Image 1 (spheres, rainbow, N blue to C red):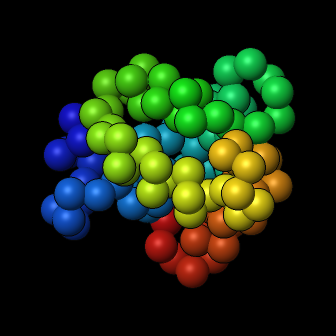
Image 2 (cartoon, one colour):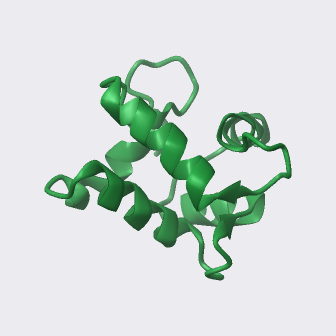
Length: 103
């Protein structure tokens, strides 16, 4: 499944490829879509996404994610370095990527 999402075949799941998982969100505005995606990953409703929640999310979507890919994703999303991704961190990066047309 990872191969199908890796559109540019660089063996990395990039944010535009990641967002492709959410095809049913096409008609939502950017902020609502990003919040929706966040809630789909934040299963315990803690307001932060943990590494294990991201891994579980990808497993539920039947997407293979290597440890280094997961670590890279957390590193990029986690701007304060606390090993969790807040809704603010998630929205900030994802909306920035959407506005740049990368997603």
